[in-house]
Image (cartoon, rainbow, N blue to C red; front, side, top):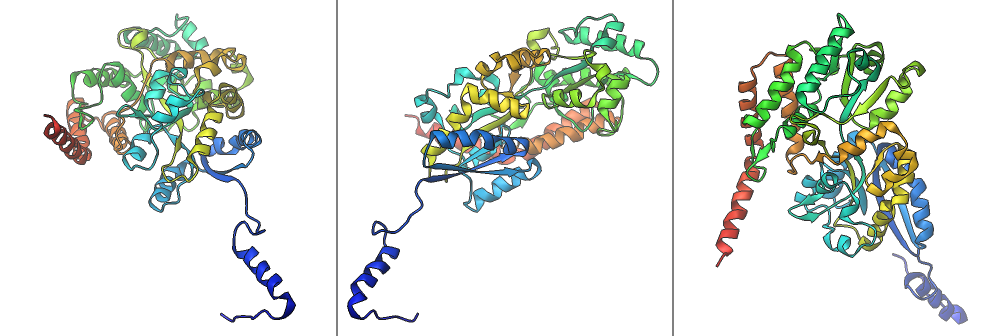
Length: 438
């Protein structure tokens, strides 16, 4: 590099000017404040920026840069960012991913921050939803919005079949489906159960008392008596001709066919509330409704999945205190209500459900009941992989005619293979714990 010598009376001034450019505190301009990187997915990534502006006004000197990520690319992008040490400070994380990112030591434990918080309190959330964020007794995420599965049904058709509401137990539900099938006529069905959706199948299993995985989440128990009971009920719906036996989601437009009466019931989540209102004709207003899922032994056993997304802090964040302030801000009940109005998502905070815009909607009442009966799927990193095997098993039985016993036994073998490394890790930890005892 070429060196320029300063000469003459301007030498001291020039030297001072050069130092001012190079050294902090000597008149140099530095960008003040903190910049937080916040990754959010889909529609949530679009609308959260409106809330973030208010956070920035409350916290001068803190700037939040929101990056919207498509759901289809989110999982891989988050993993790549963790490996490449370029993770955001705060991120939206599907709550079935919490176990995986905890095992990778990518996200920070929040137990101490929650214990000191006046905003985030476990009692302010639906218990099953909160539990999706807890690994070995330690919370790693804060629920942001929630979902669960309920029953969407044609109220008018059910009345024609002689029922004013959905029965609360399996036997009554099955009878109502048979009655609905009779009044519907040829080529029509009581319920649509897409074979590319495994969730209704595992919901029935959890209702029947199956833990899905046993021995600290190291082995499948799908061939056990509890899950077998659920599988028999599920397959019985198809064998009785109450549901169409079609590949995947082969009904091209389920909203149109629902309106036509091709089927009268469908298990789905809160995202379909808006879709039903947009896609069904005005004539259908008041003709459909939602109900909590029936259970094998009555309403209280009518469990469903605890879904949704959570807010997490990445361990690599350089500004964890400011990042936590953002999580607390987005967790306030009033911000939860605003977020729900902007997105159509259901708020995670129980207090937010008292707002008239939510409590006054009759369609949401079934979700409010169901969320109190929501339970997490097994909190193991391998669950995403296991869920694919569940889908293949459903398709083999419904479309391929595979026997229930052999399918469930094969499913357990496949799940045990997936969990082989986890069994080794759990056995090692047990051995260490035993060796540490006096």
